[in-house]
Length: 309
Image 1 (tube, rainbow, N blue to C red):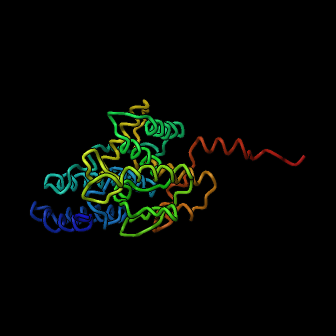
Image 2 (image 1 turned 180 degrees about the vertical axis):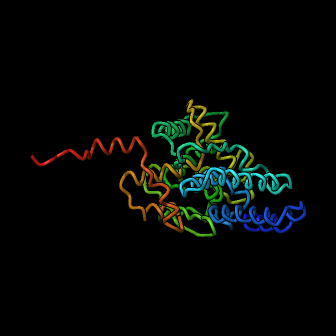
Image 3 (image 1 turned 90 degrees about the vertical axis):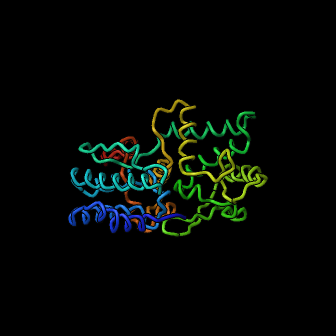
C-alpha cells in the first residue's frame, strides 16, 4: 500500500521541521494544518492515493465551514510545502498540489459536477469507440475505457478505489463489485443496469486472456496495473476528442452521481451508503442546489400554483 499520510506527516513534523530549525510555534501550526487535512482525507490513505480532487474538496470544506481567506491560504501553503518536500525526497512522483489554482475571496465553492450534456457526450464517445474496430487501439483498451467511464458515472467510486479493483472483486452472481475504500472499509457497489453489466462482462472476456503478473482489473498499454494518473489521462483524451472545453476530473463523476441521485429524490442516507461515507456530514456537501435545478423545480412546483379561489 505504501507509506500512509499519517506516518508521512508524523515523520515530517518530528524530523524534517526540527532539522530545518523551524520554531516551536511554526511546527505546531504545521502539525495542526496537516493533521486537519489528514482527518478529512483519511489519515490511513497511501500518499500515492492523495489526489488533487481530495485537496480541492478540502478547500471547499474549509470555505463552507466559514474559515477566513487568510487561514485557508496559510493551510494550503502548508500542504504545498509538505507535498513538495515529499516529491523532493522521492516519496511521490508528483505533488497533488501542482495544478491547483487557489481562488479565494469569491463566492464559496460548490462541489463541481459534470454538465449533463458533456456527461452524455463522454459516455457516447466511449460506447462508439468500443464498437468500432481499430488497428491502432486494441479492443481490450477500448472496452477498458468504456467500463471506466461507466463505473465512474454510475457507482460514485473514487479513482483510487477504481484502480485498486482486482479480477476477484467482481461477483457475476450478485452483479456487484467489492470495493476496499478509505481506511480499509469494505463496501459493495451494485451494477444494476443490464448494459453496464454487459460492459463488465465484455471487458473481462478480453482481460482474462491477458498474460500479466498481477490480477488488477484495469491495465495500461504496458500490461501494468493502471494508475490514478492513467485514469485522468484517459478522461482528458476522451474529453479532447469530443471538444469538451471543461476540465473534467475523475472525482467530478463522483460529485455528479451523488448530486443526480439527490436531485432525483434519493434519500440522503442512501447516498451516504452509495458513496461509502462513514459520516453523513460528509454526504451533506452534495445537498447544495444548483441554479438550474432550482429554476426547474420552481417552474414545476411554483409557490403560487393551484391557489384556492
